[in-house]
Amino acid sequence: MRLLHSPLKSAFVLRCLASVWGVFALSGCSWQSLLGLDGKQSTFDVQGPVARTQLQLFYVTCWVTFSIFVIVAGVLAYATIKFKARSESDEHAESPAQGHGNPVVEMVLIGGSVLALVIIAIPTLKAILYTYDVPEADRSNAYEVTATGYQWWFKFDYPGEQVPGSGNLTTANELVIPAGRPVRVNLRSMDVMHSFWVPKLAGKVDMIPNRPNFLWLKADQPGYFWGQCAEFCGESHAVMRFRVIALGPREFNDWLAQQRQPARTVQGVAAFGGAGVHLAALRPFAENETGASGAFEVAPLDAWRAKQFPEKNENPELISKGRQLFAEKTCISCHTIRGVQAALGVTGPDLTHVGARSSIAGGLLDNTPEQIQRWIHNPGLVKPGNKMWVTGYLVNHIQLTPDDELALVAFLESLK
Ligand code: CUA
Image (cartoon, rainbow, N blue to C red; front, side, top):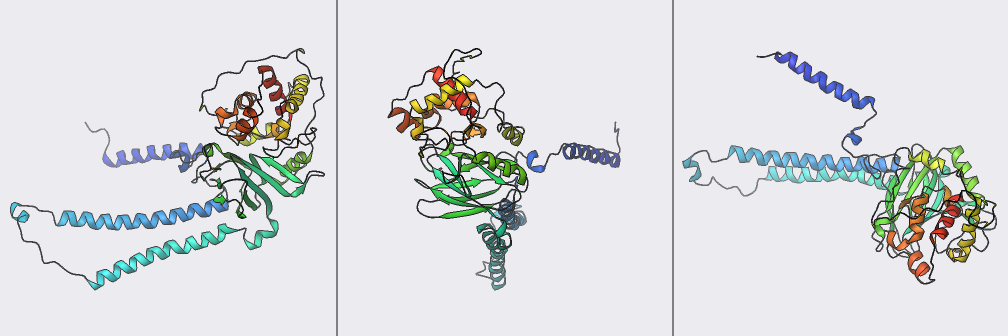
């Protein structure tokens, strides 16, 4: 029995499709998210003009090659069907007269190929010129930072921001930039070749030893972006990551002012056993267990903002003990913490405000007490071959008791 007449049926189907579309539209779903193309490092979910230009160029190339595919596949399908053997006699028929070149067809093919290349070449050249450096008109408004690749982490310098007594402002793993403003990133390398890539904003451009390179990027809106070294640079290349945090002008200036300050000092007596000190044992981590804690999955920028303030339940005794251990265990010879005596090392990342960052260990682990403990417990397991493990822990025979680890975690977390 037919319940629906055809026109009714198609109206029903259309209504169903419209409501499905409506649900996605209302829930703010884009086609990128429908197809799963809006991941942390998706080049389809662009958030700035440089990445957008690169994506548009990708689409032009795709459409041109797709058109060529349709034409070639269409002609092939036409010939296959039209000249198919339909009977016994067809199968044994003489071959038709063979042609040896047709000037018109050849001219059309050559012309078509040249046209396809020109269609791709014009936007390619425009994109190369546009993405090479900050556009002339915008140059006076550009903000400048320097990114340096190390095996296996990124250092970020702010040449325009001087800190009295210690040169320019330096941070690591996380590049904080002003949103809506072009940012020129000088690219340097301390050891081997690395490559700077923030898929949603810009990249990739190589960081080459002894060769000054640069790129520019701009984030349309305040946001939190994931970056990655994109050039094989040794055994832990895959875990050489970083984050980019774009802030509005006022918040960015507040952040700079905070960063210029020396490390926060929490007063306390360096001792254990005070009321409320609870020593939790390190939970076992699988060798390749993810460092993502879930804290930065839903609203990463808000989670980052929350990291800028001291924890409510800080333990001053534990923090003081951690500060003391930071010197005793020779951490000071590789890391700078402005405001902590003798912590002047430059081999490893500057840790002056490490507690206010959302990630540690080259952007690999989320900055949570659990992950810091995991990292200082055995850095070699998290990032094979890294200097902190090989030339730090192994050479200096650094051994940390569970109590030491907790004190160091509390100290590092307190550095806002
Ligand atoms: Cu640095 Cu790959």
